[in-house]
Image (cartoon, rainbow, N blue to C red; front, side, top):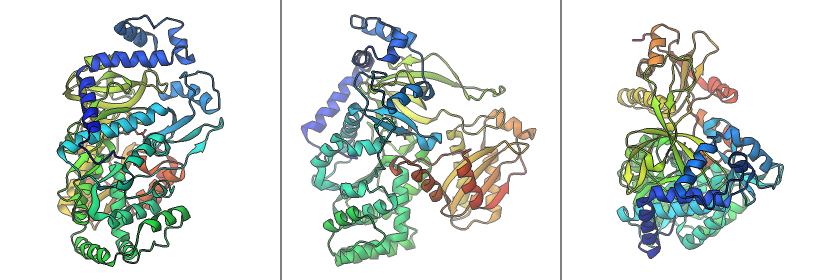
Length: 593
Ligand code: AMP
């Protein structure tokens, strides 16, 4: 997912100055963006329902903005679902957009537990290409890369399929990899990507990962940086490398390809690229033996000596993989990639040197029309409403305030109108006139038994506290985690599932369990625990490989490896069955407060 490595071209400079200009006038640009979206889709069924036949052509920009936000209601995916379903079933009338929609994307299936259709158009691919070029232009100022170098990209497309109405469906990344825009990018940088298209689109993430690693090492002296969409894929790839490095070295030595790779097209494409290189193979082998002794600390730095940085989404639900990513990267900078969703790209990282924990995203005001619902955390959680925030009326981009948390609302060129994305962000500052957002979490509550309310972020902080004991008191690491609110048994209680690598004494795990129980600061939880209306927290240790089984379950159901995010809380019966069957130890936090 990258643009030309030759960064000093006018193109790169131009795209940055283009962005600086629109950022300066972001408020105005937003009103123009809204006008363009409404003019392009004037008269479509959905808008007609709310706006009637009002003539928007003559209307002054700010009047149009207030008219639109006062007449068109906020919508969830469920509100738009019947319209999208008709499109999926082949209705070609102008329902959401004037231009017929021929492609649908699957969004956030892994975070929400079910996949949702979202329209995908040429605009989606164009903005993807645009944000990649823009982000690359900012990165190249801090971390210049060598012209003629290569990129090791852990990217994967999944299968595209047809809906009942004959539309092409698949994940947004898959559509992008199949788009003209991606071809343009590939054509421009053809000689720079380690893996050919056959590896990216093999449809089998394990085989693709093996080939990405093999080709990445074959070209190791030329690799300028290492990237994936979400950080999870890089961590998974290097975990696989720990297992398969000898076989990979053997393939490099002999110019062969492991029998594990069974997909003929991919075999052919890879074998056409590699040739026997015993000298390189023995050098890698030597390095790997040393690295294995050091538990693979600094693997990336050592094996890819020309790499300047690692680039991927490292925020939000990817943050728990940062420790492992740092472990592999050694002292190589980690650059956090941009913020977007299947529905729309949102913001670009204009400060690539800021650490992933502090990264912000400058909103791109031409991509969609953005609104922001102010959110206030409830201090006293004494109602049983399933919501953790009080919200205010949405405000336009020009009225957001630094330090305030918001839920993002999108009006897109692809036919989503005042669509609640469900992400919580905080305005950290401004880049010229456009807000810089901190990603906080998905809005949806994930853990609740009665009056307690905890989000993904709350759980993440608690797990961080607990897992610190793992690293401090035992030389073990947390591989992955999820949770479940058990309300079937009385009193209800939280269960946290951990997969760990390394040996840990039971005494330490009991302590971890207690520490996590005590680390939930939500008032409802604290009160309920004191009165025992929520029972002791349960920590379940699952056997090695359990989260891989979960990943395989999702992939089997059509999720894309490139977009996979481990669900941080689940009520999904299949997942719970996997987790419970694989649980090897259970701990309860008996002492509380
Ligand atoms: P998807 O629907 O699979 O495209 O996933 C989109 C979701 O991934 C967004 O709504 C966010 O919750 C999350 N996401 C995307 N980019 C980032 C980022 N840079 N930081 C944190 N979370 C992100």
